[in-house]
Amino acid sequence: MSTPNPPRKLLDGVKVLDFTQYLAGPAATRLLTEFGADVVKIERTPDGDLGRKIHFVAPGISAFFLAACAGKKSVAVEFRDPAGRALVEQLVRDSDVVIENFSPGVMAKYGFDYESLKAINPRLIMCSISGFGQQGPYANFTSFDIIAQAQSGVMAMTGDPDGPPQYVGN
Image (cartoon, rainbow, N blue to C red; front, side):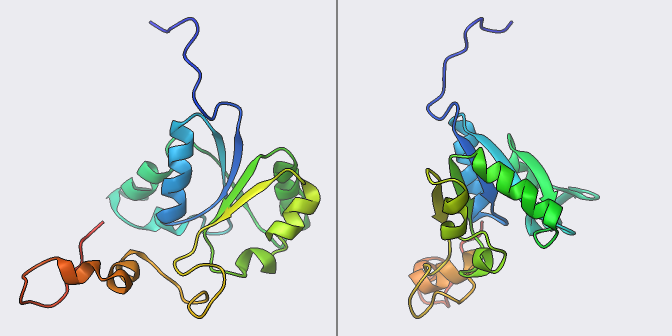
């Protein structure tokens, strides 16, 4: 049985473009879907989100990707192709938020940095997620979970007190 008037969610009507991959970004945008946002995941061709290639539960099926991307729509785009660029630009016009987690400078390389996207949609909000920020001495270093654990010192707090640092796990 369905409720005739299901309750509205906090982010109903909010449109999000998701340029994220692996875990930090996809987990953030997954939460937005839970709050009612309409999330469209933009995946670069030919491989898409690299999270599709880990933690297989069946041939070609990634539990990791399914968990991080549930509730989202998805489209594969070649950023250098004029038709792909036109599609992204149209999606930007109709969106409220863009979230990306590439290394600093990658979105600008494709002409999808905040200034370029804001020229298409002046009311756009953009969130850029990176391990060490967008500027500063470590900004261009790639970061994943294990690097963040080591840099933050959390690995030194796990495992045997007299042993070496230990990876916490996902």
